[in-house]
Image 1 (spheres, rainbow, N blue to C red):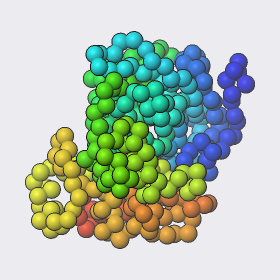
Image 2 (cartoon, one colour):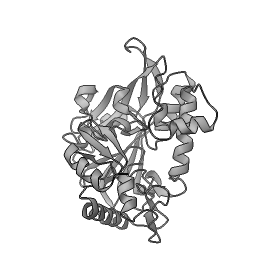
Image 3 (cartoon, helix red, strand yellow):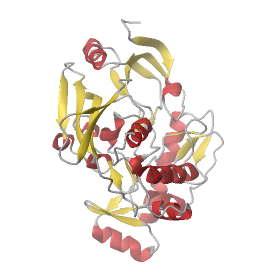
Length: 342
């Protein structure tokens, strides 16, 4: 222990990542305050083997033992703060808060806007980094600002919406600033008056089947949770990181060509083209339900690779690469990983 900071030596990261793959790290440091992150970022900056940041561990696949230090960001707290524009409620959450906890806490307080994002695994800190999204809503639509610690200097810096350079499952923290900052707090502008998004996926059908004609935000969240539980495995039961691949966004001409060959290809409008369903492509290429004993592809959602028990990181990575090559050969579409590989 260093003060109130917990330091584990030769720690197994399987416990702290939803894939549950065994991988040792020289030192795993649990940071519960912003000040701890600032101090330790400076202290460990030049450590042999380097410094890595871990949040909820729901978007990481470890493929080897990790040298150096991993800072696990466990900053907590949810509070309403000043500064929201008219009609909005500004909520500040620590990066270590469970994302689903934030969603449900907000709904309990009567703050809407996150209901379509219920039950997404991971932590608050990963939400802007990944620009997480589901059922027609992305975090950037509710984002106000974040605070992050510069791992080189220990300085605390605020990033507004523009500075984050959000894209589809993307942000500046996955590109130019990858590995440079540790997100410690995130502020969101939620809605005083609900603006329900029901037209994406099966939400409307689920509400109708439940005889809910005038849904509220909590009804939408419960519908989303029911859909996700039917389609996606619980990481506590079956190791996985949710969607392993992004849905490809194709230029209009490339999409038109592909749709002529495959008229039933699921697609959605994207900001820079047409988004097509990666799960459909993977399933059509024959990978859904693939079982290699210790690991494979989920039998109800082809986007999800699973650790059935005892799988290694390299085995799961190899399977993902085979899927990418297969989809490329059949559809001439490049699949990009959503999961970060260590």
